[in-house]
Amino acid sequence: MDLIIGSHVSYTKDEGLVGSVKETLSYGANTFMFYTGAPQNTARFPIDNEKTKEAQKLMKENNIDINNVVVHAPYIVNLANDKDEDKWNFAVNFLINELKRTASFGVDKVVLHPGSHVGLGPLKAIDNIAKGLNIILSEKEGPAILLETMAGKGTEVGKTFEEIKQIIDKVDNKNRIKVCLDTCHINDAGYDVKNFDKVLEEFDKVIGLDKLACIHINDSKNVINAHKDRHENFGFGTLGFETLIKVIYHEKLKEVPKILETPYISMTSDGKDRTYPPYKFEIAMIKEKKLNKNLYEDIRNFYK
Ligand code: FE
Ligand code: FE
Ligand code: ZN
Image 1 (cartoon, rainbow, N blue to C red):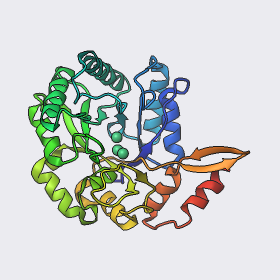
Image 2 (cartoon, rainbow, N blue to C red; image 1 turned 135 degrees about the horizontal axis):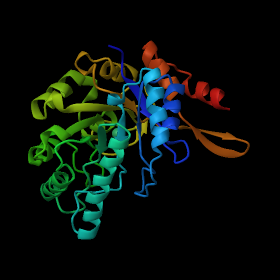
Image 3 (cartoon, rainbow, N blue to C red; image 1 turned 180 degrees about the horizontal axis):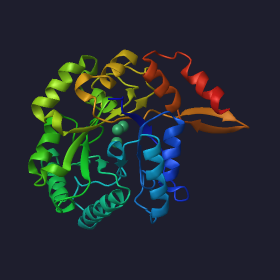
């Protein structure tokens, strides 16, 4: 089976899913992840179903298996905090709609940050998250929610496999609850990604490998256990090229989609500061299994 590799891509009102697929193809990728609107807010516009049909056709023609495609929920929804009841209810309703939107694309995975406890403590937060998920996932069928492993920045919940497992244990509809592992986040949370076999063993022991449905591939700007969450380009951070290649080509993870969320590269052109996606060049390195020391120059030359 081929390597399943892709990146975060944009999704716009005008281009719909067709734009996302075209961007994916331009990177030489065979899967992708997108937000159904802005990552940082919950404003959502209606989906153009004609564009979705066209996108699904384009995916088929180019061997993109829609079962490997992932939606990411906006990171401001916080199921962990129920201090403001209206806000918590809004988050629950938003996610119910987000799952419907996801299903209308034919996609069956939504990555979700478990949330931040903002002083309530992880135990109460885990209860709140599970309570919300049990409402959101009350229908037997539908897309799965993938809880993402977090860096432990601020009061983030889900910084250990144990916390993720505690949430899963409280969710009734087990078929619709899975996990997304983020290599930058687990490094920042204190897991030794350089010893990845051991990390996977631990994941399997605590959560179960069968629950692992997506991997976010990111290098980290910070040392292990920094609790920072700052992504770095592939091979240019504290994890390094060999470590991330080992994760990507791991025997036990062949069927798990790998998604890059590495930072855009900044460049000044015509006196304006712009940023450009690194994915085409990072995916090329991954396929060749060889570090491109000129990554930044190559990206700037390509987009200038
Ligand atoms: Fe995320
Ligand atoms: Fe991530
Ligand atoms: Zn992150």
